[in-house]
Image 1: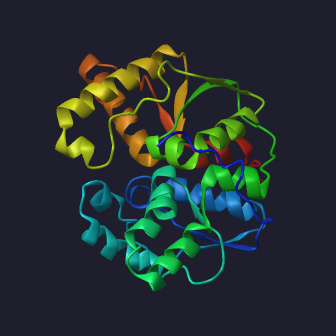
Image 2 (image 1 turned 120 degrees about the vertical axis):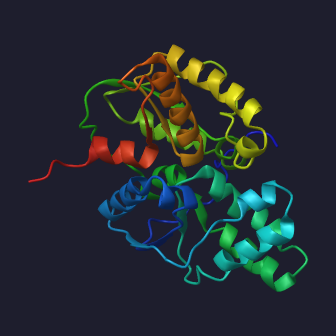
Image 3 (image 1 turned 90 degrees about the vertical axis):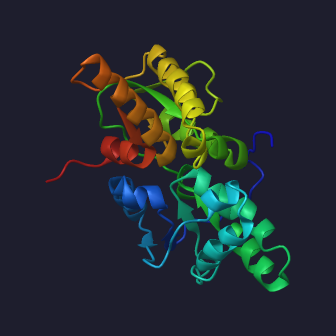
Amino acid sequence: MGPTSNQHRLYPVKPSDVYLFATCLIDQFTPEAGVDTVNLLEREGIRVHYLEQQTCCGQPAYSSGFADEARTVALQQLNLFTENWPVVVPSGSCGGMIRHHYPQLFAADPKLHAKAVELAGRVYELSEFLVHVVKFDHADRGAGCKVALHSSCHARRQMGSHETSEALLGSLAQVELVEPARVEECCGFGGTFAIRYPDISEAIVDDKVASLKASGADLVVSADCGCLLNITGRAAKQDQLAGRSQASLPGEHLASFLWRRTAEPSA
């Protein structure tokens, strides 16, 4: 599948309500990214609805070839977001699963397929939503820094959201966006790939960490927590082995980076 652009997608006016599909990794490992996603949306006057019944999107099972198991997990989400509100997903990977693969998963059942197509049409990756629906425009309150953006393979090739992530970072006056070598290459995470093929995954992420450091970036920003945890976790392990006490490649989810740099100081 080649790169996907959202330039021909029809976007709604800014809604009063949205659902947040927070993703498993944000829920379990980086909840601050979920909170900052809510902060970004509520600042725009949008009510954010987080349904505690949400679970995994089903991608780990789907990408491992277990379609029946993925369908069981996906059905929970399919029956959950009943109001006709946008579903904002702070992950191109999970967003791509719902938008592109749910209709395929339920193709054999006309009723469920129609529900999957309807839900897919309401799914927006966070940066896409901020650029095209919210029209994000806030002053950069942070100090000057160099940032490298890493987009997951699904975010880049299925959702085209690397374009909107770049636009958001480019809108911050004090941020210099630098591009590492082989920017389109995988970080080695790939969900269950990193578990099934750890040696190959480690070699891939070593190359990714090296290219990010060579770019001169002060930190790496990503809208996908799986990639971010993989990259910064490997960099932290390298730091530990080298006896470094300070992180040589810190990272931050895009939502947290945007909120930290544009939030007004507390009174």
